[in-house]
Image (cartoon, rainbow, N blue to C red):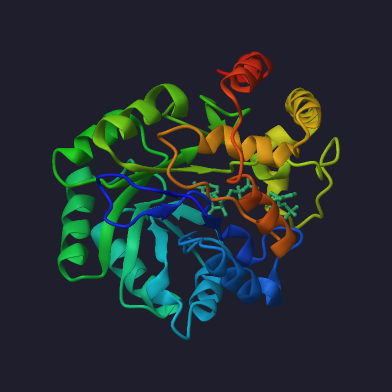
Length: 326
Ligand SMILES: NC(=O)c1ccc[n+]([C@@H]2O[C@H](COP(=O)([O-])OP(=O)(O)OC[C@H]3O[C@@H](n4cnc5c(N)ncnc54)[C@H](OP(=O)(O)O)[C@@H]3O)[C@@H](O)[C@H]2O)c1
């Protein structure tokens, strides 16, 4: 395993991390009973970052991760969880970064994760109805109490990140980033107030923050296994991604095919190329892909054993240029 180090976080972080959204059962191929084996295999192979959130499976993903880390595993890893997306009895989700909500969320997360601290606590999405100062004072309170170690912002406009930084240390950022979604302005049906490549990466570099690109494989599109037009069951959360169905998917699918052809040419798999392209960027600290099997995990880790050459990177740049701003 390769590790990366940023000034704002004490530990070295594995270049390949693990996204735990699909532990919660909202994806096809939900890992279910296999999760513990996948988590243990990941730790054995040197992965030390697990990205999760309360809203993934409405508490289930955190619970499953907490169970898998019992028996001495907890101290070997960094847990990056989140707050700010809460749900009601009918599982309708809303944004909430008010003090009382965060105070409630952190204790629930600690309980589900069976731990007394979260390493990197990330605000999942902005809440425009709560003044930043209120959120910051609550983060200060729970950090002082030892419940969280580092603070991360996910999906925030960089002007807001700057405002946060005048009040509190921001150690990490997380945003949507992959070969075909570089400065994209939407995620599922939500419009994004940031451009990852042009705004988030320079900020992260300047302030030596950790950066975790989410959906690094475009939710499976940047793997060889994706079928044209989507191939998900009704319950799969990917049905909520307009870029994976209808006319839009055609455009992205063509992009994935072109990268796949390039991968064939150099004797690698599409997902390995997608991983290397991200990993070779100095701003990218850990790629938090979801996996549904140990075989996928191993395949992703293989991408740390070789590098795309400068010339290959230039060739790739030409292939993905049409996707730079869409
Ligand atoms: N902060 C945020 O707002 C936010 C938003 C989204 C995600 N995230 C985080 O980012 C993580 C990853 O993003 P994501 O889950 O959206 O998508 P992703 O990592 O781009 O895609 C994950 C899917 O890719 C497929 N895959 C992975 N490795 C593979 C391999 N070697 N070969 C073939 N297929 C492979 C699997 O699909 P199958 O299951 O079909 O096999 C897997 O479920 C999440 O788990 C979560 O922690 C954060």
